[in-house]
Length: 420
Image (cartoon, rainbow, N blue to C red; front, top):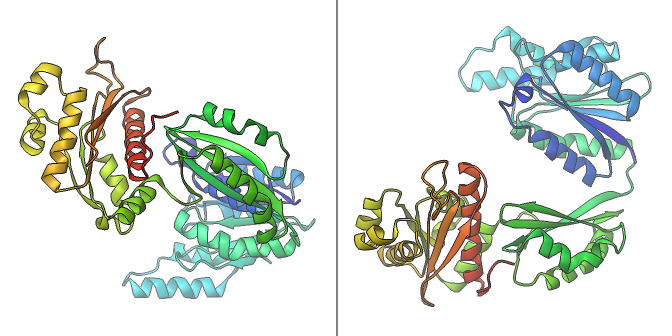
């Protein structure tokens, strides 16, 4: 199996100003293609350090894949560093220059001289055209035949270049006869330890396919990975394991691969011909945002209220002021009244409500930071759940959102069980 090392270029990565999602995506796609990723690195915008990292990686691996540093500014130095590492100069790639000139003409702007350097590639390199940006990628080779593949750092430019240009080139170059195929089973309302308990023997059954559990906030993924020559061969290996895992986790599996919990909810609601509404306090509209992120959400999502202030709970959701005065805004009864009020106001079949203390202040011994009540009202009647969530404000809000979506999903698919 050929091996590579990944280098993400950009000082902003080292300063924590930008989250590096490129490395994760590239590593996944390379692994799926049967290429071993031996190491990943982040390097600032320094020509000497980038060149040194490339030389060192080429001594250990069959190739290097970089992202970032191909733009027109003075701190975009990846191409120059590659030339230094390989001991070559640059040459103009005319198609990229023509593409840039057409792009600037189309948007009515003057192309500056510094843009031209984006069309200059290491001598002898194989260009990787960029149909959605101005910077082409390229694959250059050292005297030993080892490669350095460079792509832009902008994800919307990098991703199609990787899948449509670079991966086919690498598959052909290394005559890859097998690849890593994956299937991800998504679960919610079941803990990682409970999943491990239920499928423990499957972990030890063998290395192909291999199983891993990836925990998230209030949900977990079971990943099945198989090495195979073809998709059909991989399916024959993955399919039986997938079906057995889904059988053992029945009631907690909401989808596979690209399916999200919000998409699963809306699909279930649409199949039932039902409408949903939300009333949110501590989650601040995050549940509504998750649901409306799904194309076609308007078929089932009616609307929602972010009732952060108690006056809004009263005026918009008909929460009884006496209830708030007696029990406080963060209470089971208020959560129930919020859900019932939202269902009535929007004429929905199902309504979900959240109220809680996200912190960092506002907690007490009786009602600590992280206390969240989530209520659901439907034709089956109202019901509420109490959660005590850990983390900072953002984490509590995120976990409350996932917990709320999990409750809604269980109701939509008729699984009225408590989290395991």
